[in-house]
Length: 375
Image 1 (tube, rainbow, N blue to C red):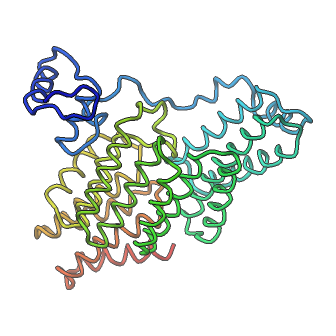
Image 2: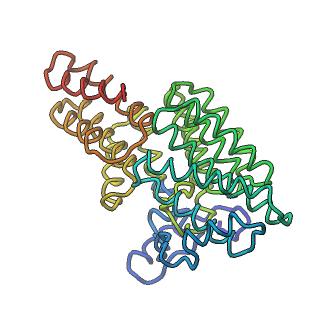
Image 3: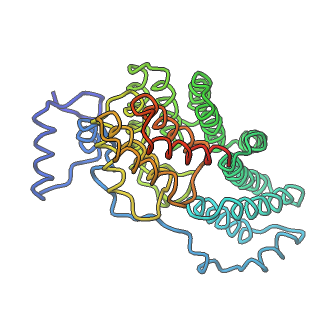
């Protein structure tokens, strides 16, 4: 049976033919066959068939309006299209700086711009401008909430997340609302409330259809189900996340914190298979995550990939490799999300305690982890 865009599934030989044709350099499979081939290998199409487009970092030098001029316009009585466009670029710049800017510095700047954008709500605005200002404030509130949680300020982070949700709802922006639910799922997951993470992820899916955050919501749900121990639900959630990514175009700026990099699917799968104890699959995915990431990008993905290799090594009886991977994950000095790192590093610690409780290197690692936990 052939596929004609009507939901029918092609015969395996058709998929194999497209695969061999691509391998030989003859033709590139269509998006439909890319998705089928990727699904065969348990990943997303952009992980196997990368887009020729590259991540578009925001270049502040190209902004026609400098900060002084922008502040003057923000403080003026009217807001024009150029001002809003430059504010959009400013918000994108801040969200793209998440992975490499020190948290205290980013938090200070993001809060400042959130206050300034919030003040615009009281100016003379058209309906469209009002919605745009609400959305800009929503994105900045999401960023502030994420950084607050990274720094261990869970109470402020939850309050800011609620503000972001309200701004998204008032603006009629389902993407912002979806990310607010994703943050709630993340907060629940890292605090051990796995059922709460599932509930939040499913609530977010109701408003996030058609946006990349739908894949992230599915991933958080899969992580929660893995920790509950329900592999069937894990596979269902992973499949939903893969399908959400496969229907979207490749994003313009994967450095943006609220843009889902299609390559993250392997990272999501790595986490759940490590948690489920499928160590060979988890370690293979961790190796691929490390291979695919340029130096300095996505430090949390790098750290969690190293922890995954550490867990696999510990379960295989290689204590030296386990402790080395775990140590690099928590001590490399790169900015990370403390709640997420504590959760995954704690999983390695539990494995080490179970297998090597009396070993000196294990006690040393546990002490380094204890210092991390009191930060």
